[in-house]
Length: 104
Image (cartoon, rainbow, N blue to C red; front, side, top):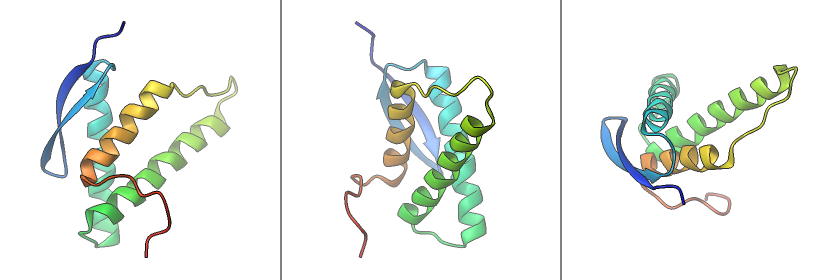
């Protein structure tokens, strides 16, 4: 059975503890990418609402994944555990439960 690890990451100046089976270096790289994307979104959008920043960053990253898939001649396989780790980082960054319906 894979071992779950706790990895400390910093996103938008806040430290989060991420628990998962992924390699710690991979989690750190994902967190750095998320932090960079969220900082860029915050600068461009001019918003300080962390939920809005996280949603826009998630859309940006999803768009990049789709572009990689579309450009790949061999196809693109997304590792479900990697996706779960990335989603956990986004949820930790906004420190709120995931939204299940339209926002008011």
